[in-house]
Length: 260
Image (cartoon, rainbow, N blue to C red; front, side, top):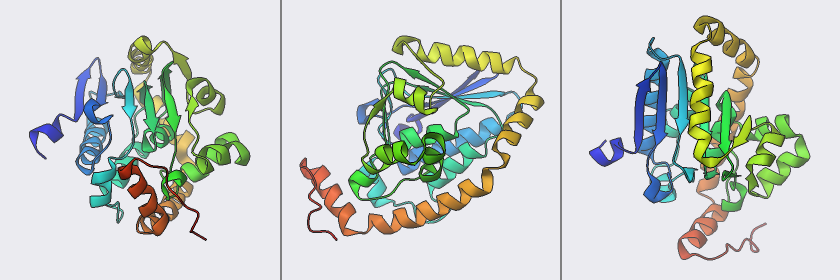
């Protein structure tokens, strides 16, 4: 990983909190293979560090993440369980320590679905969420095809996953994806205040409580993520995805009228 790539994921520790920041604002915090690897490493390091009790995931004042960097993603599709994106999701899902997300601005694709695996999500009043997987000819990922119907019921989940519609922080609170919405310039401060409250709690009791809360979901999430991954990789090579990606590059609306 070169110096530029290293600076795209920043990690700092203070007050027993590890803050991991997505730091590629010039590209709307779009995630590359190298960035997923760095995120995985940062999460695993924080999990193993006895001086860290809480993890905070953050982006920038107007951008959390626009999802995958499409050019990089097409060059390095997520094939196999050791693909960087799946390693990142596993490091997040299996992390024993509380994870707090501070979300400002756009959270698209995996920028939204990763939040399903955080313990707390604080959103700024400028936050916008979207899962446009079907729109680009692929299927949902990160267990979202199971977890969103569980959270919202089938019909509201279908609206978000099949139509790929955007939704704001107020709806995200209604859906149970976000704990609360605050002023955008206070998002990280509120997330840190929450993290400090968690730091003050007995650490083993916190870790045990998190483990017990997630215990019943582990195998089901792993199974649905495998199904999603298999379908996602196959669909990336399909005509619908090619049309969507070509239209994106050509800055036009995709035309799916010729597909069965």
